[in-house]
Image (cartoon, rainbow, N blue to C red):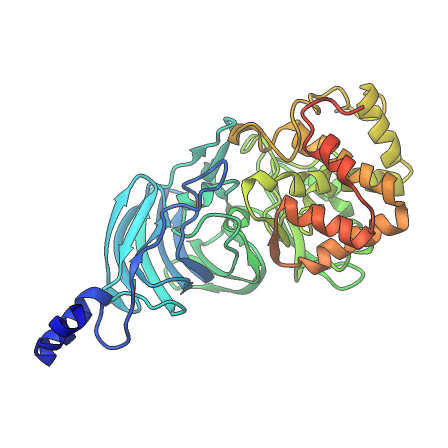
Length: 470
């Protein structure tokens, strides 16, 4: 009956009806809005559905004198469904214009969501280009655990750090670790300032108006929380490791101790990590040392970790370096998988000590069971408060069980399978998931497959068990 009724319509009317139901003329598109969040267990509004980003091109102009940031973000993405609209995570700054595929797009703001409506629906599989012009004075965010993240002003510049969602304070995007992309970040700052970001410095030029333009390129996929921008009168040093990995570090005035302290061993640490975990996963390594007091924590920003003042321990430098393999190259699928970042990085500290005349990993493990702070100063921590694979809430994703009990999970695997099999597992995990994402379920399945051992008791007791392991 419906077919007979439709057949009596004139051809132009049929075409118009089809256009209304599909969203456009020509190739049909069943456009619908992309989701405004990815339902992450701890940050449900983080990220957005309906597309995956391939590349960010960020052109940022910042003047520390007035704190104003002027930015243009060009986001190249692929539609995973027909899209009538899609969302970008973006906090605080004023949006001045948005285009999609070169045509002006309608947009509106609700909280930290920027909803974009293209002039024409996007087809499933279509690669599309969104350009957002914006400006204002960025403001940092407070994490659920009370720490500060986002774009943070310093006495003579600024630093941008983003774990878990602070990157949305300085550029619009799909801010969830499951959507990794390549980056080109251009920073224009007053002459006399350095501007440091991730990846390789492609060029440094003067623009004729008393400003310097720094162009940074990151070809390897990067989760947005690992992106950084640091501006100030930093001292820059460059070099290479013995195996040829490029080094680029920036140290704030007053933090000269970084050049002679634990950070001076970074080239040696990169070589050591490559031996333990497999080839270093990025084109360059290095560090950014902020003025003391700027942040209350270090962060493993990709290729170039940020430290809150000159590092005072080798373990801290090793920890952030190890994240380049575990967290940065192999990134979590959700924030619930944080122990895969922090457990591996903490265990790397134990391995570094074991290989450099310090306590062995077994001695660290036993110290935590006994609360022996003579072996490990953190051994009396609240490491057994909850299972590392199930933090109670977002404020706990960086709590002690995620770090220390996470490391103990890895040591229990080592005890079960032996050293040769364990280290083959670690190298294989880093290689087989290089520049990708992985979950806890992915790791447990991988560990059992590659070792040939039934590790159910390790998972039940150490990874998921609610009681203190014995």
